[in-house]
Image (cartoon, rainbow, N blue to C red):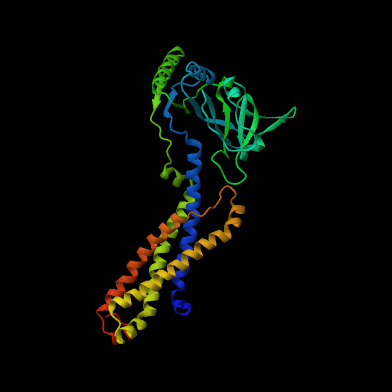
Length: 364
């Protein structure tokens, strides 16, 4: 049975480690959420993917790009154009246009209403899905909801989002590309996902011909939409600064806490050596106390996160603040080994010192 009284001198270590675990847990929950949201938006099964653009604005319309793929009926096809800006009074929001055919299926998280239908998309109906955070931009006419993009008005058939979590679609909007006569812009890119590589080659050749007919040029782009850790870190720079600060302060405080603990334990080490305890048993005894204190801190740090989760969600509703236990354990192990170095150095010194000197608090 563990006697917690003898762990009183480990209070500083436990407190320091608890704060480290708690802070890293909060920041990791934000970064992982960013990763999941990007994956949700960009994941298009296992279809071949290519990015391209037309190198002059106001030459090629969205409808013309969609009509090219209408000539190919033997392969699943998904087209996407982004970013497309919608200008507000004091802000700009960004969405994307989509078009798909031949049985392609991609479902979106729907909070209200419904998803696009195959018939709506292929018939070029002016329909849109709007992220839950942009609901204020939706207006009603004749008992139907609408959303404007530039000079065009789209019927809103659904609100993107989830009642249970934040999604990658909460802050965007989607509309039917084939319904729009707006022009492709050089600042935005096209993406095509297709099942048949031969059809892809032919479609890209058709786009090159379209560009020539429109007195512009066509180019493929080397764009990777995989999750980029650097981008995620830059997106939440304030949190990363906090994380870095916690890392540095955490290490310093951990070393100070361990130094304080070892100093308080010197006489105990001397007594144990005087009564014949081997160096190995002393090291095991100290390490056992250290590891138990780390486990206590891990439990307390995660518990603190869970305890404050509702409050944090209330204060920052854009985040879910989920606990990612594997990541937290990994961070804990890193700090544990850093602290272990600080523990072992004085212990190895103590091995060479006589018990009487150790009992006097001397390691020389």
